[in-house]
Image 1 (tube, rainbow, N blue to C red):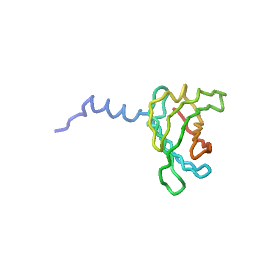
Image 2: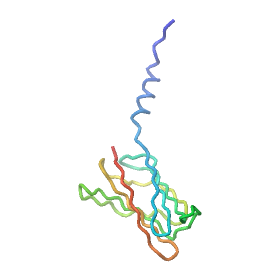
Image 3: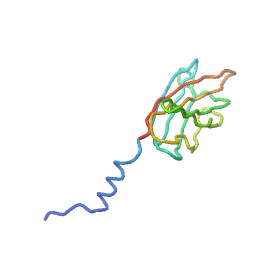
Image 4: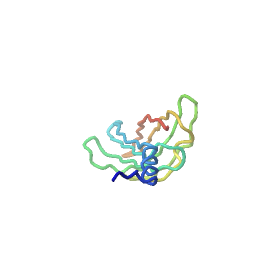
Length: 124
């Protein structure tokens, strides 16, 4: 006997296929290694996770971490977002105001110095 797939199963699979992609990146700046994870590249509230470590991968508590989302092709600069302090911070934020190509700058103040790294991403 041949059965047709449930319409609910088809709907769930279609919604999963349309889900916004995530972003995971790591960059080195000065003596720091900064990782940025965004749970989904989408307009609106997203979960952002930033970790800070030394070049050997040991957690390094930052005095301050801020994000600066910039859309270079359109000249958009969203307000800076204070993420807090520590070696491992998470926060729900409105990171992107529209779809397109974005550069997210991460400023880390730690051990008396300020470091800046950037991550390029596309919000579909």
